[in-house]
Amino acid sequence: MTSLKEAEKLIEIIENSFHLREMAIALYELKTEKFYIGAGAIAQTIWNIQTNRPLDYGIDDIDIVYYNPKNTEEKHEKKVVECLNQKLEEYPLWIDVKNEARVHLWYRNKFGYDIEPYKSIEDAIDTWPTTATSLGISKISEKCWEIYAPFGFMDVFNMKIIANNRQITKEIYDIKVKKWTQKWPELDVVKWDNKLVPFIEDKKIIVRK
Image (cartoon, rainbow, N blue to C red):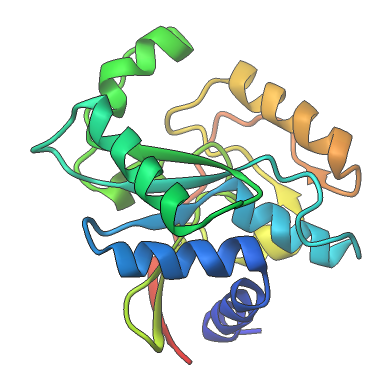
């Protein structure tokens, strides 16, 4: 299966998943920033399909990311959440919105060490904890989607968990693995390795439907 075919399969999954489809449409219509739906909710929806579970099984929240270095106040993130909650009445998932331009301001308090400021949304996604969840999707027009996948799609579709140790620690990785395997014991978890997993050549793909 080529990357384009995998990308098209991913968009088909999103369009058939209520929690992903409705959020993608709402973000597209909001137009205040360029937003990506990222990480867990996407991967976990795929895992549910692969294991014949309900699409929303085990998914607690949905991660929304954007990049605005000119406005790094937390209240701006909260305003986005408020707008989305108004547009998506009775949305079943907790909406977690982060401006990746301000992550370095709070990262030490949460994880115990400093990081360099991100230069873009994509720069942030490049550091997300695993190869399967380093993934962002954005609806960019009525018929076009943009996918940013620095490690491709093979691991997420194969339910393979490999650490992306560019930023996280082994402790962070182990905590995530323990949490995920309690819900999806079918996951193929690779033990922590200090070697960096290389990026693929074409990180960004446009899918037209």
